[in-house]
Length: 91
Image (cartoon, rainbow, N blue to C red; front, side, top):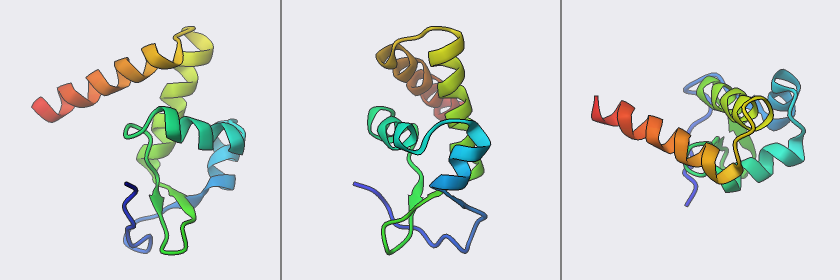
């Protein structure tokens, strides 16, 4: 389930801006949100619009690097990113 946050509390960007910054097409970002949930989980406005935080942009860059540069599979990239989150939470 997606959480709705107040987007005014932190600086966020619409998906179109996130696509321009990262060089990843909008439809790909939407797909990655489903594949990499909960690693990539931008906040939503009450109207349901995606809002990307800085941490989401950084995650997109990580996913892009793993898939395109390091030739990870989708499942392999997700496992790696989830293990990194688990390590961060344990610290």
